[in-house]
Length: 477
Image (cartoon, rainbow, N blue to C red; front, top):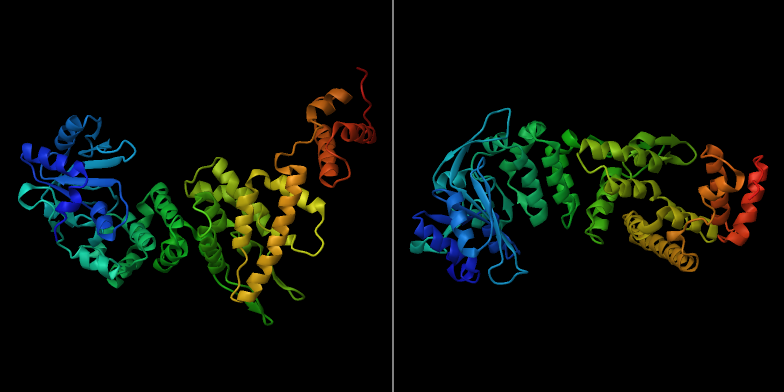
């Protein structure tokens, strides 16, 4: 199979080929770019392997292309970004000399030596990532496929090129990558390869949480993330780095009353959100929305199983889970925490008579994240009974419309009470204190309940009355 015509459409390959010839080294495109070319998937990342110095080749290419080269001498690699034909069409090209690797049991950092193209392909993680294309004059564009990766692409199969026990023992992160590729590409994992992941799953413990979570995030961002979670669970990997999620598994029945399996319910919610949004953090809110159900599960003989307060406990658990998985403890975490805490509120409003007060409170609490919350809540309506789901969705749409109508009227997402803490302190001659906060909360609640308009004409006299009830007298001005 020859790709010379395809490669010639992008001048970067001709440039690399010329410079390799001038330096008297053999060069090859290898790995993910070749895989994606065969799958007709867009890819802007090119890995070049040469039988010689990858750094020298990169610098020669960079000089002619007129672009800077980033050199990583400790790793023997170099990288450049170029847009030879279109300044908006940027390609990232990484260069490395062919190498062979060996590993120690306690580390996934390899001992690296110079090697042949065969050595370099042997160290690749999967057959579909071990294919190369020659950039040499004698056989430019020829596919080099020692492990029959092309056949595995056609069979939609993830398979290691060598003994999977050795592959995963050497670099345990490859177990996560196998599941990530299977999820992203909708491929199966070769049975022998998957059995090896099961046998070797404890080796994941030597991998940093940052690297594990990077792969997990890519699974979560895939078109159907539930597939990846099911594979992680079946392989025994999920339990090792995310036991809180595995704890959702199982459905109990007492006196004929049962509850849904919250593991599979959560995966359905995650897939539902994935169908609506590419936002990683909204998807994380789906992952965590019921995370506290195991801890709050109780059986009541009258009503069956309950999970009272799981939304509040789940919100409190969120920072700890983010910290454990080395996820950011910033506004991204606070966004997820907020949605976990609020995810029951819109659904609880699905009644014939919905008060403006309840709607105002939800609008105030959700603020700018209302659309994300409503997407999560809509995704949370799951059942095997199609008609039941459609009925709940119709009711939910009615609540949504009421919310947006009220928001249009009251502008509550940017709601700020006209009575501030500073005004309360100035009026009554107070210092910052709990009493000031209490008065402020009472005024805010009265506005949200519709008892007082959010205007100075109505809210200021109301503040004076509340202050008097707390024993404060306005100071003379």
